[in-house]
Length: 126
Image (cartoon, rainbow, N blue to C red; front, side, top):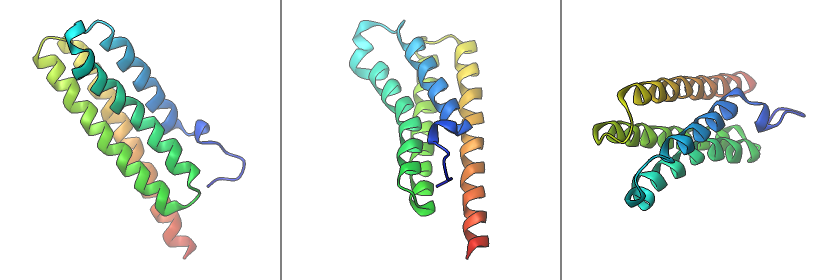
């Protein structure tokens, strides 16, 4: 990938880390009986978003990076589902769900934009 640039410099990775941090904070208030349920699931998939961006970047090939970005998108959709369910169950307030879903939407758009950019670059390099 980009000479001298780290995955930590990618805005999409930084936003994913911010989202994971917010999810950890939000789930601190979940009931103890959810520790191995929604709490664990939300934390794992939120971390997976950033981790897959980093792992794909480290593979040092556009095709692999795109594959891991798509896996990251899958984790993002999983998180959205958990957020919506958390709202329906009253574990998160509607305004919290709304704010978090805005963040997931933004991150999804950024990820799609990065995928499209890499694909265009790859086509132009061919």
